[in-house]
Image 1: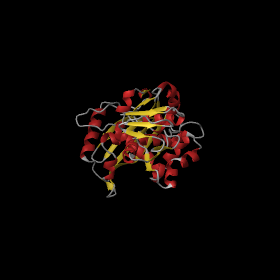
Image 2 (image 1 turned 90 degrees about the horizontal axis):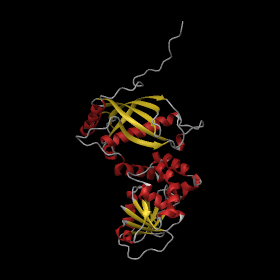
Image 3 (image 1 turned 180 degrees about the vertical axis):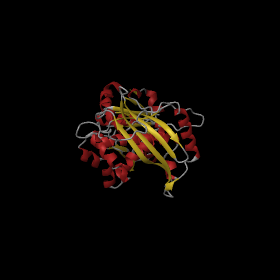
Amino acid sequence: MLVVVVGGTSLAAEWITRYLASGLDVAVDDAHTVRDAVASLWPSSDRLGLFPNSSLDRLRTSTPDDFANAHLVHVIDAEAPSGTPGLLANDATAKGCSPVNLLPLVEVAGPQAAELTGFYQSIGMAPLPADAPAHERWQLGDGIAQLADGDPDVIIAIMRGLRPSGKGAGAAVAHHEATRFAAGGVQRWQPGEVPAAPLALYRTPVEPEWVDYNAHMTESAYLTAAGWASDALFRYIGDDEAYRAAGHSFYTVETHIHYVREVAVHEPIEFHTQILGVDAKRVHLIHSMLHGTDGGLLCTAEQMLVHVDMNAGRSAAILPDVAAALQAIAAAHAPLPIPPQVGSAMQLPPPKH
């Protein structure tokens, strides 16, 4: 999908970054003049979360034909081109809140408001009508920017901190996450597919809120990151929003973490996931967290999960489609060596005599 952006201001660079981070092709007046500004915004968009296939390489200089072929033409502090056949956004019909590449608010208005609303929802933003209550708009835009004093790391931390509330920016960041995953961040296993051994489904930089006063990733954050790796596994096997809405989920009943090496803020980490065993209700697995640059082992998180009927409030058999995926993964992982951390007991050595 192609978006054409007209304008070269700092706000235009934020919108360009938002569109690129959403996995879209973006054509601009002069790619050379905005590339550095967009590149400087890219790391914070990466920390918020990139859609599949998003890349700075999808930014280019526009041609006359692009205006006829674009899904959206966005004009920012500039004159609108004549005869644009598709969606047209401008300062009056699609107003974001700086930094637009991070904040979810976009106020939509005009005759194409419904179409613009659908488009911005599809890229994980939170469109509101221009006459929405001021406090509702503040919760999604200026309020967060003011609390964070414009710091990108703090903006992301605030939104994620609000996620459990299901309100305002918390709901918006959850929507952004769900939209990214639904766009193919983790492709669901299909019958007949041979799973990778091990699975590599989750990669992220170390988040600022994961770092403690020792300037490295704090112990609880290792488990938080492992939880996101489990979430990626769930989506791969078919445990998605619809599965959970129907009352089915996996709960963790036991975790053993081995801390091997420290890692600092914004350093890349990735997870390799190995299924160690599956039965009718349980999954035994281990996540190995590796440094995203040198591949060194940072930690392992061995876990036992139980499948739960949330409506009944008790364990229940894993549903057939998800069970089939888990059995396929277990079969593919059976030849893998068992990591030495599996099944270890924590104890002091016997005293020496």
